[in-house]
Length: 483
Length: 136
Image (cartoon, rainbow over all chains, first blue to last red; front, side):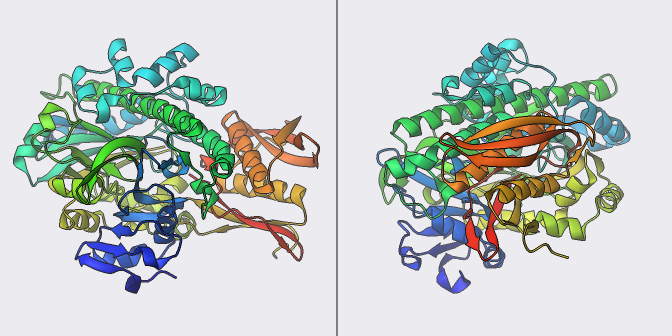
């Protein structure tokens, strides 16, 4: 049983589990958290899972763990591992079934007071315009050729169709398109699932949330992002839907034999992997990028529906009702990046499983508008609690492979949540707190109750304390749409 | 009263869902694992509509065949049908599973995939048992 004593304290917000903890570890595990949240993280198997990850071949530096860490399958959620492009591996389970699950944030100049009376109408309209819920399909069905174009071009496909602006594209991680995507490496079944799901939110922890900018901590960065205290903002949280799930399922299955072929020892079969440079590794990378591009477009289509809802609700009633994109980020992905460890630059594939890229000022790949302040890092809280907008820092580049936390992080299982929380009670409680809720399932709502998550403010204090990011603004929920 | 020969129970998992399943043999394990998965999903079916089909699960180790089977059923759920196992037999190509399908009325929650995490089918005094973790 892993305990606090096994960790070496580096700072108040950085702890290391040395390689000596278990004989098969190839690199240490470093967790960026307060002592209080570390103790919480020790209550489930998340950190044992991080130890399992540290046994994979070709990892550089350490396995980085975020303060919102919790138990997943294979990799912990909130885990980051950088695998050498020369002799490292790629693991589909280390990226997850919901490839490029991520968050988009849009800002408005609509003041909360001007919008207050219209929020119930807006909530119902967004719920109608944005397909959500279990097994719900999107508004369109793509041909296979169109789907292939989505996979190759990402958000640029939506731009050509008139469904995205140039600013949307510029303010999306990698401009909404990972190069090297190859729909030829995607199975017919995945394509069949993807064709009808573009523009759908899904269920589970996916959501659309209308917030008010509750506090601004860095006025300069907030101004650049278009965030103004007291004004509305919108978050969209979803991913690649059944398209990505099927790609991951296909490759986890295919990689079961790859570990034998390449003589890779793994402590858990969900950690199956293949050398990045192998045919299997390259095939998965190309398919994973196709799913990532699909997910960027999926969030784009939902953003369009949200914009339509804002136009219908506020057009002619409120000045400046338009929504402008702040940023769109992914938190389940494998990205080829260059990072320095102990003064040596390595080209690596950074596996982020429930972790957000958090590039600091001046980093390559940021749009010009964010070059000076750093990349926006979007950290949704749970329903009823704050969400945060941060910027990446030099600290994240040095310590966590340019990565930061992605949310609050669960502490309670879904089965426990169902016993402790009634969906209808929760809905009433949130409504009393001034939050409009639209949810497809009350049981599903209960599983996502605020009390099943860590305190997001403490998570944020940890990443700030560890120097991984800086605070820009805090958001407070007004409308929550859940599938 | 817990059935000691065949059954399932939900076990705690922070982010996802997990089951402990047990059965006297592989056919029973496939059958009860699917029923447990459907229970987690809150599946309700049309009682009168039935469709019989055969499914071939490619020859592999027993854990891989269980994961393939459950993921196939998840895909079928997306297309509106839930299946119950009638029989299964191993031949040179793999596991031939005979299934009875029913149209779905509702699903409370979708499962993305059955995973290999901590999946290890153990022989017990009364048959077979394993934990299964599902990504939701």
